[in-house]
Image (cartoon, rainbow, N blue to C red; front, top):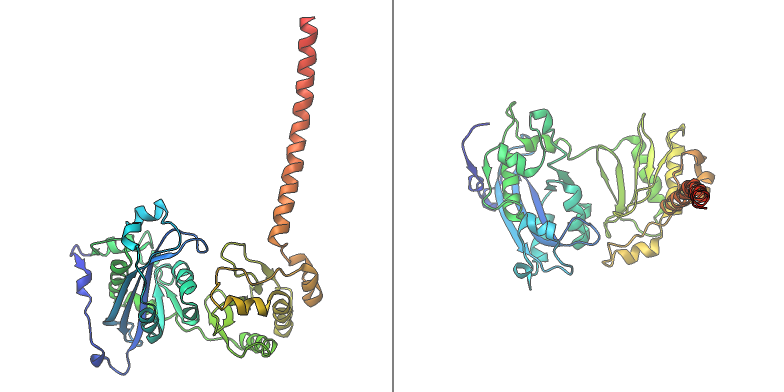
Amino acid sequence: MANRIITVDCLPFIDRESLQPEWRLAAFVDVETTGLSKTLDEIIEIAVELFAFDPGTGEIKGVIEEYVGLREPGCPISEGAARVHGITPRMVKGKRLDDRKILSLCNEAALIVSHNAAFDRDFICKLYPDLAMKEWLCSMRGISWRNKGFRSCSLQNLLQTHNIVTGTSHRAGSDARASVLLLSMRDREGNTYFSELLHKASIPLTDEEKLVLEMIQDLVKDQTTNIGWHKTTSYVAVGLEDGAYWFIRFKWGPKAKYIVLRQSTDLERERIDVTGLESIKEYAEAIRAACLASIRWHDMAEQYKGRLGEEVVSEISARDLLKAHRTRDRIRKPVHKRSSEKTAAAGSGCMGCLLPMIVVLMVFGLVVCVYLF
């Protein structure tokens, strides 16, 4: 890379009147939080950069509008988080986000981009559930940084390697602006980094996946007609557009066929391997059975009223799935059962260790008594 220092001011601002018909809009979002727990911690700063791009070339034309705001959380800021972003309780006291502005910018965008989207997306969607139905792209995992010669895909490392100076690192505003500038830069082949990310934006469904979605739609037609889906390279996530909660994920492929039932951030996800099923119809029926056994629609409706941190997907029993698609040997045991088994095993292991020690101590005591008397 050249040694020329690049500042975030190099990224141009353009007005809406200058937008060309073929251009599209995207929103880059970044958050700072009270900590790393997606259920216990909260957002304290959010930045949104609405920018225009050419979908044909992947060239970023400029920033249309931006928003940066602080928010007073309902929980303390952890020491570890404060050391990273430097935000103190005094700085956020009495601060509130402009919800209308944030939603306006994000809804205007065709897609949302974030560096480590798995982290930012969960925090943002706790505040704004409707944004979960937007298409999200991850600039950290969606670009092959290591194949391009970079040792790390962390944002600060990439900015430093590209000589991009932010002024204030680990703050949402400067990080978001610098990230858009980074994505506008070109690799050795002359393509923008953003163009590689765009290639993963719209992954079409296969005929098999369409069949599965049709069966899920038929299953839930009495509850809602607002089924939404989001396909990545790893799975298809299915949820409700009005509540934006992904209630099931599935994958169909020649080498991997599985259903993911659990969507909690705290609990281990329940994956059921159904590779042994011979046809997509059997697989779709297995999905149908999983939905019937795992979804509580009343609780889910309550979840949509704002309690996104609660678990709404119930345990699915091995017996139910055994009846559905004969995959008993492949079904993983529920988390709480595995935990109790581990506890019981640990207890029996401890007893096994204690008995020899007791025998040794008794023998030692007997020897001492004989020696003394």
